[in-house]
Image 1 (cartoon, rainbow, N blue to C red):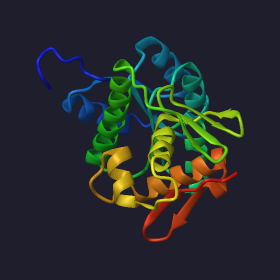
Image 2: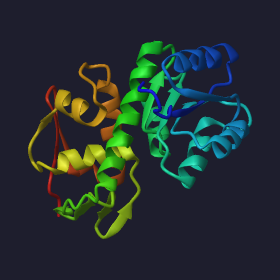
Image 3: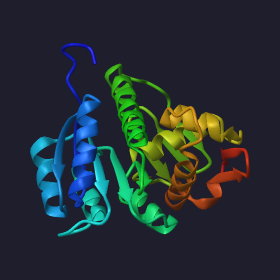
Length: 234
């Protein structure tokens, strides 16, 4: 990291002390500034105190769970959240994405994958901030009854505003740039997540399902083994 560059501030929330400390140690070694919490109330308090750039958040926590933590911090501002879960159930993952998590990992995980996911999330936020600072004047996109205000990062369907996480917005905006065109999985992962391998295949599928629940299942077409396309629906 170049001299004088401010280190990104992370909050690690994990009730298992060994895992919490191992994550914190690795992330500090990777150049991040790290704070820790071990339960739901402590996580919200630490978030309010340190205003982290990103939160690594376990789902199962004492006090109240990670889903409630995510709801509370997302109500304050759209901070990126990497959800960590011991259960590999798709319904649990979709609930996490539904309350504002941007990505998820299932235990056991590899430390290098945690670092890669965090860096990808932070790069996406930085890119969005740069566009906003540059006064992006990208015109709104209108596809069927769906409207994407790319400059304001707002979405409406049928005239009703829909709340999307930063990741969901980027995914929808990418599909909306070429309506009706099937974008390959690899291209979507590269553009939205910054990944050059197939580690994020399930993450992509889960985000698409969460997005369908918000904008309409018939708007996003799956081409099995290839990718996804956004369809114009009246």
